[in-house]
Length: 152
Image (cartoon, rainbow, N blue to C red):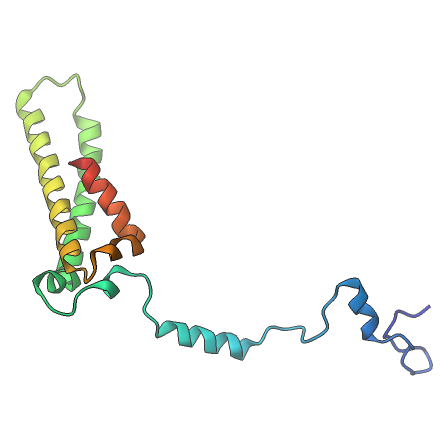
């Protein structure tokens, strides 16, 4: 017995062709994906605006200029890193058992400073938006909003 569509020992094609496979739910057509088509779709999507928040900023104004600034982005990343380090230091060094009021006051002032900086960042980014409803299009901004308002 020869599998359908295979050549017999005499070199002739078996009477069953590939159309017999369609009844089994198998697709006939190319085996490999259209690589060129995939490349074209990727290149076309690269030119489109995505969901990143800067795509929704105004074209003019002080807030949009600040929000688009690399210095602003890098300084906010630095504050995030310092805040992470501060949380680790505060957790490790300051406990409820510490009764030194001077250090507890300093820790609270530093926490307020971080809250003020992150609120300032949120206000700048919110002020830079063309339409305020665009805040829901960027999930990082939604997360930042929850963290800032939860901290206040």
